[in-house]
Length: 240
Image 1: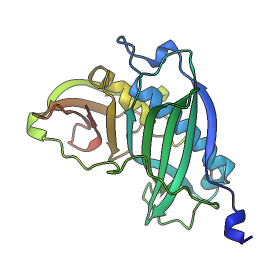
Image 2 (image 1 turned 90 degrees about the vertical axis):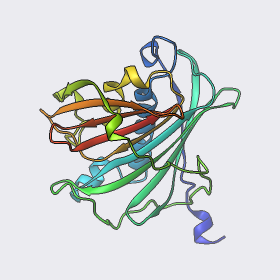
Image 3 (image 1 turned 90 degrees about the horizontal axis):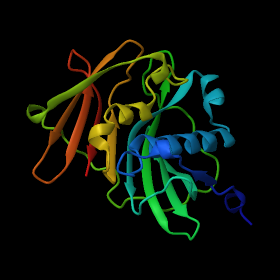
């Protein structure tokens, strides 16, 4: 048997459930709740493979999520048990790819997601081509045939829908706004949508005021953009 075939299969499987607070008024799973579930299992898997927060920060590195997409295939319910599976795919240049699948106990696919991660220098906050990779056998399968499609927000169509002042409760261990919080900020717009994509352009820090905008197009897509007062874009989301 070759050394390659002896390597661990790069996958992690966990049982999960959602509470009533994870759903909106119409009974739809919140975007932030799915993002949190994906974030937690990604962190746990990286840690189990020796590339968690503690291991990276010792080298002055941290993981940063740059893009994420998920699609809800069947309605999820509070209190039910589900199986969440994740695995990374081979990285390209500075981008690390990770997919997620949620199944019910009858093995029906309930939701699927994919994400792009990179490693940044904790002090400079710049992306680095770190000599870091997962050691194991990758699964050759992609969550979406077309990945996370690029989209462009029509700035002229944006309508302001609110603001959010960043407080300590919004921050994570990397000392910037946790990615899930952006979905919470725009929950009224994102609620009920089953195909969700989000791009993270710049970190938001304690004390920042994020201005929130919304736009719609003729194809039924809804866009949410968060940016600073100087026009710096923090995140952009697209839902349908």
